[in-house]
Image 1 (cartoon, rainbow, N blue to C red):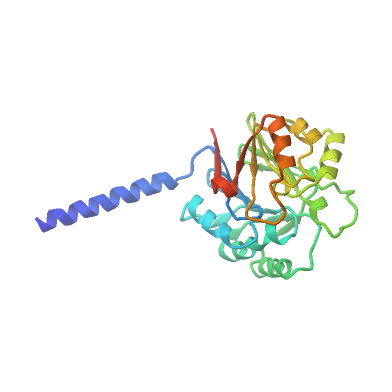
Image 2 (spheres, rainbow, N blue to C red):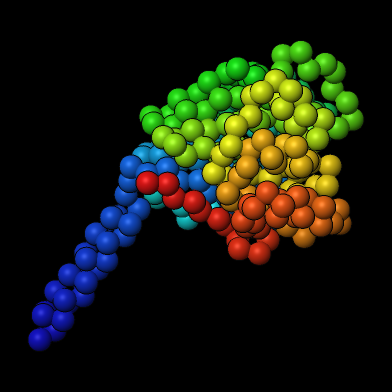
Length: 270
């Protein structure tokens, strides 16, 4: 009787393990995962067994997010993109670089003097991660997913006290599904892209600068016409997301999801 009970227990464990593996096994769908990292940005793009991490938040919360959404046996990020070198976007990358195999890191030429940026640079050097500078016009292909860098322009001059003007803007396309990741750009950068006619309607917009009133201008939103707008935000003293930004998103008919309300947000595209 005890022997039968042990066999049943082992069989149950085996079935549970198989179900867990099936649940974790990569599929042929695009996953856009906006990690809940508080007042910061961290987004994982996953297709099959390939992952691209865009920013990593203000602390190590991103590690928990990656641990939940990536298969437990997969410890490689094919590409990491740092949109700009401010702490709420880069701090989590320090431990990510130490704990994961990173195929390549892409960033703008903007550099910071903060301890966090220095620690990230040291971690990249220690792990011998290839670092590549990016700018508008660069293209990245991940199987059926095509990414195009819209910003910054090569002609972007100087680095002011704000690094927002250097934020990387990524336009993604998967079949007829489009998405736009905007870092912390402001209305100035938005207007330049409008003038260059580099924008087009998308299904998903990562709202710039956590919903700041100085981003997501009406003209910009009318150019991209998002069906869904995701705001990566946490408790803050800036009033993000601001009533002004939320009103403009509502005016173009965008459904708004916020990580401070919904937690980690995953969008799956067939």
